[in-house]
Image (cartoon, rainbow, N blue to C red; front, side):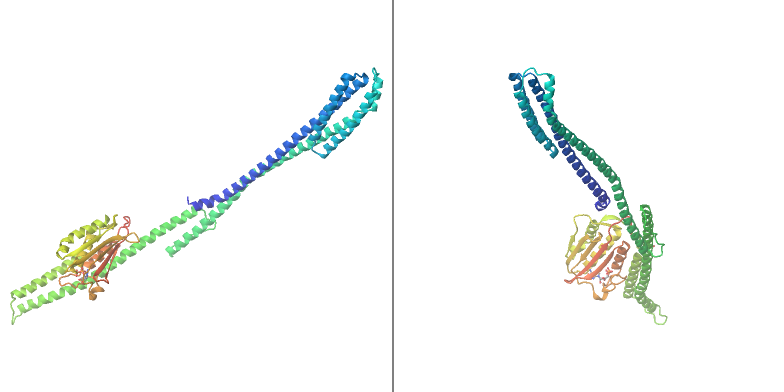
Length: 500
Ligand code: ADP
């Protein structure tokens, strides 16, 4: 597929795909960020809750050991245990202080600290008054006068604050996962919707292109042939319609080509008829002169009153004129009976080499240097080799005729810009006589005493029947130049020709 077309078709889908991918990546990043935040908040809350519970446990331990001491003081063991409890409580309080991460928690920790200091002082005073073997009633009174709830209540408030915080975090987590679900749903829906939009855009663009192409096809059809009915083009044309239009256009092209070829055949036939007419007139002209000469001699010999017998000289004249008549008639027959060309693919370099071999002897005799320049690669032509050889020999012999005192004959074969062949034949002779330059390629145009004037007209006719041409001009540096052109080889298009 054409890369531009591919880009045009895939670009919208690629853009939408990239946007969706970017949206997905952003969502994933955001959700992961939220989740890691929540996880860290949650772990802080758990640590803070554990610290608050630890505090409550420690304070209850302290109270228990205090009570034991107050009931039955054993200073050595109990005071040590109480001291350890106080130290444990203080450490737990430090941990709780570090773990608290809201103002409310920090307030609770401060309240616990204050209440604990008070409780510690009260207990110290009580321990100072401690006496052995107190009754449970004494103890209840002591406990009531120094309630542990002063410390425990803020501990429980801290636990509650932590629980609330955890509940808030859990709530946030639920809302994040809800948001994530929504985001996924939106992205999931955006895929097919984006695909639909892209598909619609591509289809629209494609339809426009098809329409534009259809209009162009119609235009071409109209330009090819105005007589033919117009190709119908609708704005919503699809590929099938376009295909139908292309088929119609192809049929039209075939019809027009067929017509053009028929016209060419008609024209050629008309040309040939005109040439034959011209030839007939020329033959009549050529035949009349020798016939008049013969007639006068014969009439003089047959004169009744004073007959002049034919002498040897008269007979030679009659023989010469009859030979001229024969040559003229033969030339006419050659020209008129030129068989239809039987073209085939051939390397024109070989045709040039063969023609050159035929004139080599005469060129050497006349001291004419023959220079042939051909390309390294074959120059393929689609020609009747016999007829094309006749053309080459005619042109080479004419060049030799023009250089009786020697000279240089250059033959250059090459490829024309249209892919056909181009052959230039240049000589250093006297050049084309001006009196004949305008009718060089018409039959019987000659300046040579024994010439027929049929060589160039025959060559021109052969080349035209091959779809080629010939042109002549005099060179500025002296001598004549003939250029032969042949169309590109195309075996399926046989040269229009033959003689009907
Ligand atoms: P013919 O050779 O029988 O005269 P052509 O048709 O071959 O018939 O040539 C016609 C005339 O064209 C020649 O008589 C000559 O005057 C002229 N001509 C052809 N080729 C050359 C050439 N290479 N140099 C000069 N004149 C030429």
